[in-house]
Amino acid sequence: SRIVVLISGSGTNLQALIDACKATDYPGEIVGVISNKADAYGLVRAQDNNIATHALSHKDFNSREDYDQALIKQIDLFQPDVVVLAGFMRILTANFVQHFSGKLLNIHPSLLPKYQGLNTHQRAIDAKDTEHGVSVHFVTEELDGGPVILQAKVPIFEGDTINDLASRVHEQEHRIYPLVVKWFCSKRVMMIQDKAVLDGNVL
Ligand code: GRF
Image (tube, rainbow, N blue to C red; front, side, top):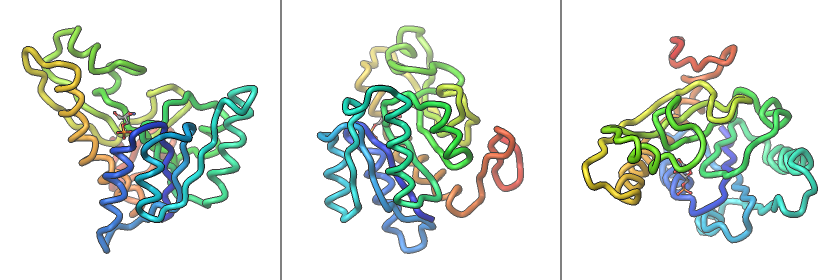
């Protein structure tokens, strides 16, 4: 399968996917990486691995609608089977989500439906939660609201800083995202009527 990854930043999840794709039996290859920020370090990671990159700045467009249309065009040039959002810090238009419906994956650093949106680690600590985690889900028009495919939990310990917790969550991100992309590429997981289905079972 042809994988396109969208990023805005350091791209450690992209790196995990690049590494996973190196396995000879991995059912997908990353054919392009697109960032809305030209200085995203993830672009360097891609280039170091001879993966095509493209920077498309939202600042060059007058509206979210225009930007997303340009982004659709750019992604379609790579003819992807799956579009993987890996720290792409943009709210997507309904048009965009519909265009890639059923093949758009996101990773969100919380145990959804808890803590949609930003600052999830801080919010979990502030709430004195004892566990936290990460979710990989299909993207639908509802922000961070699409059907969850896989979650990983981590403990929150007394005295944890945001960084302690973030790195504990990141470790799990790097484990579960390549796994879910693998499931998708081998057609074990799919979205049917806005529900995630794994091996024929609704999740
Ligand atoms: C991750 O925490 C991910 O869950 C969130 O954005 C962050 C991206 O990190 N959506 P990285 O760029 O992959 O290191």
